[in-house]
Amino acid sequence: ASIFEQLATLDSLADRGWQAGEGDRRSVPQLLCDQLEFADVLLVNKADLVSEAQLRKVETLVKRINPKAEVLSTTHSQLEPARLLGVARFDMRRAEEHPGWLAEARENEHVPETLEYGISSFVFRARVPFHPERL
Image 1 (cartoon, rainbow, N blue to C red):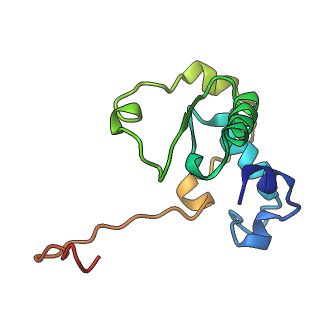
Image 2: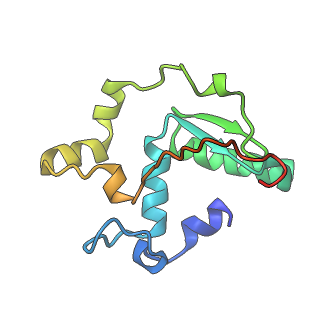
């Protein structure tokens, strides 16, 4: 789905099963805007599936929402790792000026993103490597 469709939807996070918890009443556009506003880097993926004019429209929108973020267009999410790794982008002063940061600090109730968005990870170990033709 396009960013424009997601920003125009009336769906709540609960409608999609994305809510952080029982009391999470945010909408999909609210979550999307929160993420866009606070990001240091914004990847505009699937650039090969839209016209140049459509791509510029998306890039203009995300730049308007977050003028300080670096906007990178990708195809199949392919990007040189050096564009993301080892690049010191985080700025504590800038983060502290963000309204969401201040609101959370005032409420003194930080919910880690791992809990808020159900993010988890695991380590898979095996003695035999994956067979490349069976993946």
